[in-house]
Image 1: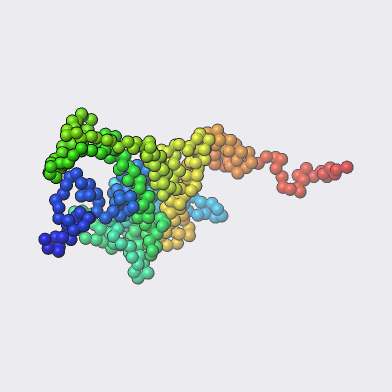
Image 2: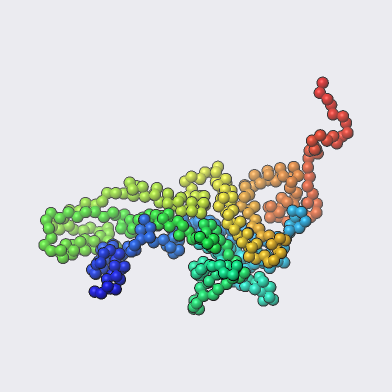
Length: 419
């Protein structure tokens, strides 16, 4: 065997300079060589999504972001504003970003990219009439090979879709890029979850693999075979072990087996409850959810949830989990989709008010208070409840008659002085 062949053998086996043939009963030939984590699991974009908590967190983030209204507003005098439905970005963000996707489908896909890869890319295509905004075509983060600076601009090298080969270079004027911290050293893009939290995901995957193998073996943890003597040859020993293993694996795992030659079998007695398997599995779920600052009840872990705190946790989910993503979407859209002076006259907003609403009785009580003390009108209340306004009469703001400025005396009478 020459040096190259020996090197290939080492890389294939992961142990020593061995040239032995593969043994199906020896797991060292089938585990990943040189595991990248302490738990021995290879964590990448494909394997990380195999864990149930990762998929649940993606769904918990993408669902709300994709359904909330995202609109372009024009600033008016004072603090007033109005939706600019004629702006091309309004149609792309609120209705249809491209020919094949609705706004909900587009934002759902992009939010999954942003949450998992911490980057969401979309190519900005010009309109048929020459306008700067015609459509937004999503680009999977795995296709973005590099992001680099040049000539005071940022450029993106993107791999073409099959069957085409090669790459294309786009400037930052042609790419809508939403990114989430932690960022790479150059600050140009976010670092994927499977890079920053590799050990956490590896441990969670290892626990899931242990459970799968336990049930694949019929809930058996193996055992020890005790032979009163010795086998005549190693071939006899190998034949006996092979027959024993094949008789207790696959569909034969629950069948009776016959021990010959005085061999005794002692099964391992460690059980899942003694190994705290369920507790470890739950703890791994909590740790994975913490990567996204996700409340456990949002991913189906309800052990710590009660009827009294579930509403408060839902509000905290919007304030502390969704809010950074909402801000990233809004500010990246203003930077990349508003042209020229529009940055000063327009802004993009995702309305999260619907997620912050309490139960019906609580909402009606707060509406009554706002109406009574004059900071809500009838039309304001109806808009918050997704109802049509009643006309100009509904824009009147009222205040209680007994509310007067301190020191004023609307009646004109001298105030009664204390005796």
